[in-house]
Image (cartoon, rainbow, N blue to C red; front, side, top):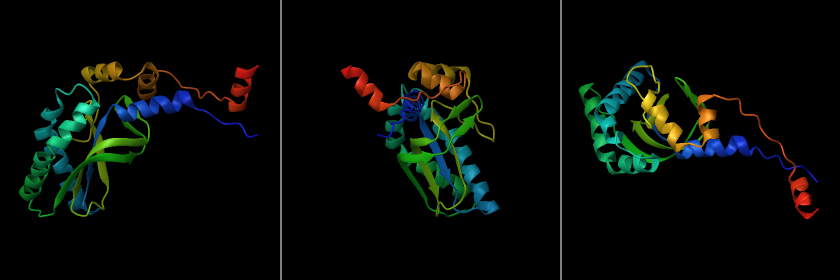
Length: 189
């Protein structure tokens, strides 16, 4: 019988991280230089005008609910910025699960996975995207994204010690390999 490989000390913390953050995902209309500039302008305006919505959130579930309740406002901020930039692309806003690759934000490394995200799609949404974390706040305008002390404390409070160690890379996590059949036989013997 084949051995069942269990990586519990890696998978469980990664799943917990997925559940404890709300990510921001902005998709550009296309990869043209102009559309990429529009994406950054929308991102900056969203962070500037909508960041306050998430300041008093107690957890990711609360942040997700606020994102859903204020999606109309968030969409209007994005549309106004596009119009200010002379662009008439439509904007759609949704809150839902999205697959993300592993990403580093300053001293924090989020593992790949399916995260709840506030997604802002500009036009066709066929261009390169940009993402950060709305809760806890790991977003800053400009190209630099980092976590301040308060954000790190929120993460430490909401995550298990192993999940926190994983994202901050404070310790090296070594996978534990176990044989399921040996566990079953061990219970009987």
